[in-house]
Image (cartoon, rainbow, N blue to C red; front, side, top):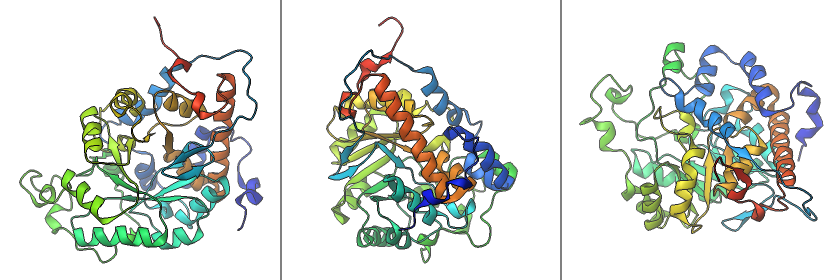
Length: 371
């Protein structure tokens, strides 16, 4: 396999952290594409607070720890991972790089990081799988065309995907004003290729606001917990739900026999003024009580953020926008470099807080006033 590290000279020397990729990515995107990739819902309060909430948390260092044979390995659903970091599903990656998801999976394979592939990928799920040398999970939107949804599940299984991640927090799209103001539309040559041939909703549902939402055809076909039970009957793959922000939904997921939960507010792209994901993680972890893997996305920008999420109950985290910015800047080498930076930061943070392995990470690592 071609090694993305052979082209590290493409990466600007001034990039020392994930956040440094953002300005370079902005220069390489049109106003419309930047609005889509970087923007959030409404006033983008949740988008910003996902990062800010991590910054408000403080870590405690430990003195003279024994770090012999330390590592960051973990196992999820019988799959081995070298680090508790996965690439989150991001749609239409050809918007930022001509190779799109193929460049991303090349980097994920080189960095030995798992990748969650979006239903709305701009490359066919089978083509991504053929290039992968790392575990792949498939993110699924339950489509109004249920027969087509079944076919997507079957295609993912046949292609070798090892888990199904069902997005449950977007029965309708969020109102993303930044995109609206920029006039975002998919350019020619970029599409959700995995959805070719699907029956569409009537044109009257194409834009929220053109007709009433309640009582209209869009919500009439929106998925419910019934569809989760239906999906469970279709596949033996581990089934995760992505978009849980309320403890009652975590309880329901447990009752429905779901295999994993991803605490997510859709990167601040659906309902604005939600809390940050790291702020609700601990409450949901108390409900789950370790009975299934709990993951988190939203706002992870540093290795210390990964450590904080694990301290509050997550088994692993997913990163989204940062690797897309790296992809836009330097293709596969950029994504691989971004993942190297994040892993190095996590290892340093673990060493300085006295954690030899992920099993050593717990809530006592966090400094809290008055405790």
